[in-house]
Amino acid sequence: MKPSRLTPGRLFRVVLLLALLLAAAMLGALAIGAVRPGAAALLAALVGRSSDTQLAAILWQIRLPRILLAALAGASLACAGASFQAVLRNPLADPYILGISGGAALGAILAVTSGAESRLPGWPVRPLAAFAGACATVAAIFVLSRSRGRVASTPMLLIGWIFNSLFLALILFLESVVDFSRVHGVIFWLVGTLSPQSYAVLATLALLTGTGFLVLLTQARRMDLICAGEETARQLGADVERAKIITLTAASLITASVVSFSGLIGFVGLIVPHAARFLFGPDHRLLLPASALLGAAGLVVADTLARTMLAPTELPVGVLTVLLGGPAFIFLYRRRQAETPFD
Image (tube, rainbow, N blue to C red):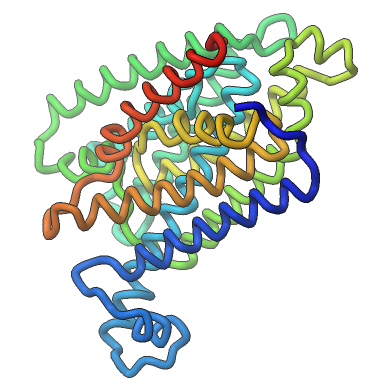
């Protein structure tokens, strides 16, 4: 599909279309579940004019916080994935290939197995430990992959892959030596799950990820130049190293923030940017917001399916994204391969 030239009008139309898609997905997720209100009852409960206090509680205290977390997680992972793929110039790069998810998972496991979570009831020990683990991983990868003042893409990918393998081995070791009942909840979290959070937590998460998204947007043109080749980008006046550090730091912190609360949700950061690139073209001024909105809508739909398709049993949303994402990636790969060699 040949991309159209980006104009302010096209940018506005695409963002508006995807925003409407996200709004429709969120309204559908609000209406679907064990309790299924009609359109009038749903609207009345949302605007505070319903006499059904139970329905209002379900919508405002359970479903809406969960939907907002799904939207934030989907938007963040997709946006981070698009950024990683650009600056690392690797179509398989996503928030997990750099070991960020492994670092977060190990931090969460350590918080539980060390007893810190049980000794500090009421504190968000597990999310904080996961965030610290992810940030420590990012810092270590930056230090180890930096050579002669430059952040090298290939060493960064290799070190991230090695870290992921190392963290997985450590997690399996801890699971083997610790009482299974103590880590059962963490294992469920590891495969990706979205539980309702307080609005204060969601506001903090939105502030962190929103700031990171704005930082990534400022690097959109430099991402385009880097995709054309680092030497070409330098010849055109772009500070490639500065752009890579800013982009990788912002995308990593976004990922760490989301993973701390949602667990490991695979394939969103890999599939959604490819789908958005296929639909709307490679210009990152459009690709970043399109990926964010498409990822938000997609994860809201996936989470709705995960909690309703086998009700009352609830599937971890990370399992569903992998089951759907694998075939989707193969389809996109084959489709693009038919048009042009996958670079």
